[in-house]
Length: 317
Ligand code: SF4
Image 1 (tube, protein in one colour):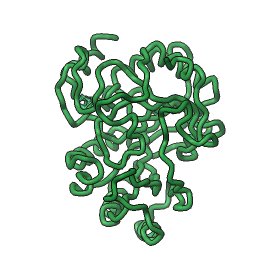
Image 2 (spheres, rainbow, N blue to C red):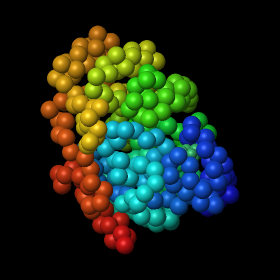
Image 3 (tube, rainbow, N blue to C red):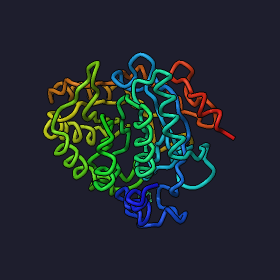
Image 4 (cartoon, protein in one colour):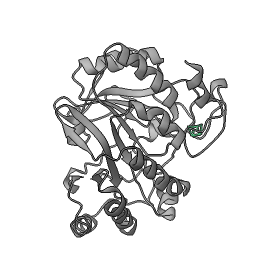
């Protein structure tokens, strides 16, 4: 990899954890990954928002590891630090080729899920992929837990930011996301995004572009969601669209959590109307089917939701 990209792995500060470890020499930070890019799954995914899914599905790439360790994470098999994970090491050249395979398979876009800690390798792969014909939009699908330096590096390659805003409440962040630091970072991150992407969300046949902010309703924390929606109405509405999700699945063996209730959902709709937030997507509560992906399988999702990329499956040992 180019030296100017390697520098991000040396004294790593790609996310607000600022571990300052040398991942080039194999040291691990909180994300639990060295500079060897590992991928857990690739394929067409039809469970994303309609503009991402389009006719054949979003060309989704799930990276292994994560700088946040949310207690409720549905992808905990691949996001937790340490331990064996169902993922394989993929070179930048191989990832570029696999992106082309996704495009050939009919993917509407390349959907990079939690690539925060692999930004340098992803940049190198995208440069190669573009040089060999990748032309579909690139989606940065993330928790928003990147440092501004990390975002500045990946930004020239991204068409659509599909980015989480989990909470602005430090206690909720500590309970659900494992760190109150998440909240401190959120406002800075969105200020940077809105200042560098002043044009609002665009989706037409030629273009998929802008910022789509995802918020997942946590059970029993409506005040936090109201706080987020008030922030969205005031600060974000002119820059981004909203995607409100209610697919919270209580983690197994953690009785701290419950499911979203109909009363909470109804209250959510009233708040949206009151704040005149009317552009974006609101998941139906009835769509909240309580399943958790199993990344030890070739297709971790229900068959109607996803179609694995054969070339990636063939690379598994
Ligand atoms: S990506 Fe974040 S969590 Fe991982 S080593 Fe770098 S600073 Fe630490």
